[in-house]
Length: 155
Image (tube, rainbow, N blue to C red; front, side, top):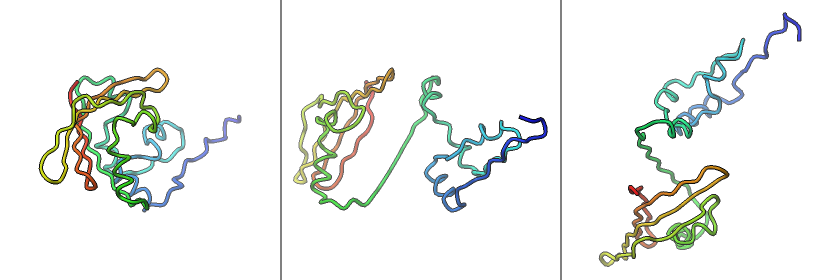
């Protein structure tokens, strides 16, 4: 490589409207910290998007205090609601059809409340990929054909 040859410039290939959607979802396509280390590169401006994003996989392992993480997603699926509900609420069989789930079991018996068939139970799940293995306990609330709510519980 010659001395006069500069590093290639990094230009954002993503339209501005897509970058806004990416920021709203709190994900970044390129990390500005990495881009800023490259000589001659331009830093992508994500505004405040990355300022509040402090949760990473490795950094969360190194931190003593856990940062709360709330996530809510919705998507229109073109399948019968009863079929989707049956798959999501079948926690005991997650290990058979979800990737990286190595164990899934219901710890407490289901309890029914009221006329709507509401039931809650505790489920223990383990996941693993190569050298990463962990286990967690969740409280699951199910109202048939309406919703499933899952909350983490201390082990």
